Image (cartoon, rainbow, N blue to C red):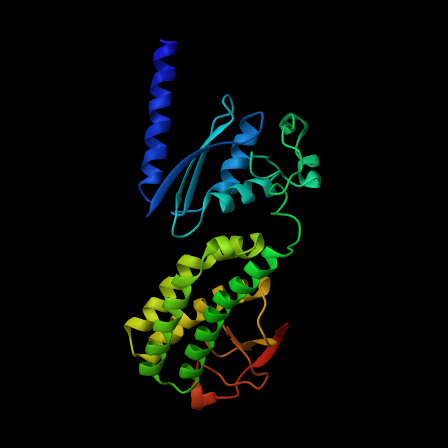
Length: 281
């Protein structure tokens, strides 16, 4: 009976993993060794690697093997393994930072077979040579996202719904063009967090010329762009501004390349309503 129970439990795990994988588009599957000891390790490894509808990790504490399924157009295996390494767990490609490993509970401190090498601590150290070139290319792709966001904002300042819809098409295109494997770890983590909302809000603005409806989505769009801009860099200072009247009196923020307030939520009705609450450099 115990053997039958184990078999049924195994089938149940396979079914659950398969069901989760079915939600992942452009799916690619790989099996990778990740070092760890116990069920606590399993929980941490899977939490670090999992991203809703983007990546799914199932780790076996006995074999130390992880079954990883991911959307190959949205991320890649290295990005998943970097996140797991930053949580304290080595793979054959990336070594966890020593200080993070040292903070793991004693029962989770596995025997480290992987020594520091060329690829192992990329996720925690700086860039040089080829990496700097990749960073410059990456910044250009994120710059396109920011540039198109500012174009949408300017159209809403004019209360021009048709123009805002057109500019949002450029934003959708820029978001789609970003290659996540070119982002650094911090940017990648934020990108994965905001990507779905970023696309959804931009697409909604494309689909209507009603400036009021566009402004509703611009509120949450601005939140996503703000989170991304905080971990990236733009060519000039960016001003995070706030209008207390927007969003039915709840207040709402937006981002601008100008310190002077030009309110995208009211346009000419209350063009200067608001203030700069943060400068991002």
